[in-house]
Image 1 (cartoon, helix red, strand yellow):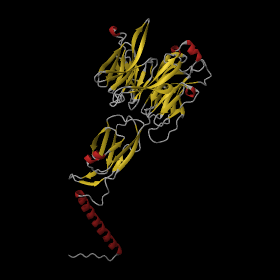
Image 2 (cartoon, rainbow, N blue to C red):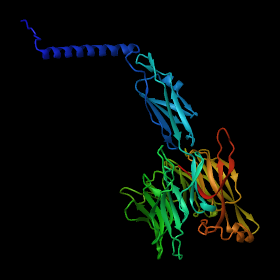
Image 3 (cartoon, rainbow, N blue to C red):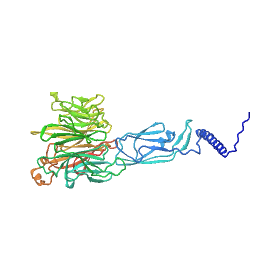
Image 4 (cartoon, one colour):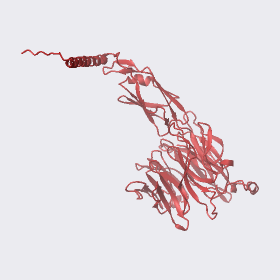
Length: 510
């Protein structure tokens, strides 16, 4: 049977032409892909980087790795040989498909601009044959600004939070002159500071009302311009006296405050304030406390031990862990897997006047690091949790009194080796802060009215702020900031630098 197709209609001819054209195109594409599998196809574009995870970003201590994603399989050897970072960042490379991962061996130094470039690498086919050379790729990124804040003590800075940006070489007073700051803490992104302060405009002189505020720092975790000094009241101190505070929750939206009711001293404890919810008391014993690094729980001193209480979820305000041997949590490692704690040895008559520093982790390890007959003032972990840097004192008898001699040490967690770093002339009310990139420890050296001869003290009357006092309620006359640069592989000696700043309670920005 013969079937004849008649293409007399214009529409029929158009349809046949389209079908013929599409058929030829499909055949060409299929055969073209086959050819490209054997050799570089002139119709293909050059290989390129599809994504660089740190492109035009600011990165900090928590950013430990970046990735490059390519649009096709590449010669891994050529990529690794031609990848350049300026200034250099030591790290190791791994691959997952078309993604290259670069993990830093050390924390990225703050306050620097970086340039990543890659050129000369070629695509690679299944038959191990090399194809086209990639399009050159260049990108830039920055580390966060190196900055710290402190409470000023002289001139217009007196009693106010001042932030010093060492990267941009500028200084900004963040808080108004009518507020005398008692204490402050950065949020994790560094863009805000929460602080407690006495309002000097308060007309009722029968008590010092301490309110808690939030202020913007002007620092930014990205390249968006931020305005410093924007103030917001978080919690008043009329009915309750607000004392020590800390921040919890994923975005630090939970404020934890030790509070005492003014007309009922028996009503005291730890309170949780979250957003617009009414304040909630979560502990009635009023012990010292410290929020865990993940901001999900709080460690509270409970008699002869440390209780762990969740801040959110079904088990909030209920003890989920208890460490009976310890009387104080000094600090947590950055990842929250370990902590430095003090055992006051009250259950051991042979060690009654000895304080012991312990390393405790979430795998059940409890390791004594040192004993001292003086004080363990504070300790800070390095970024990796492998070392502790501590300020200790040694008690010595001098004539009829006991004098405590302060000194800094580094403690290696694994070996237990203790390395002396620096001796100080005094230890009173010293506050220390570890730089997020490990550069060094900031600390203050306070001079109080009791440190000066009466003649010298009288000459300063009227020039001091009566609300600037130590933890033991001694009036602060002056305070100097210092930087202890920690040993590195290139410089094995700790270096002490006096900063041209009179201030209190210095804290590095995260």
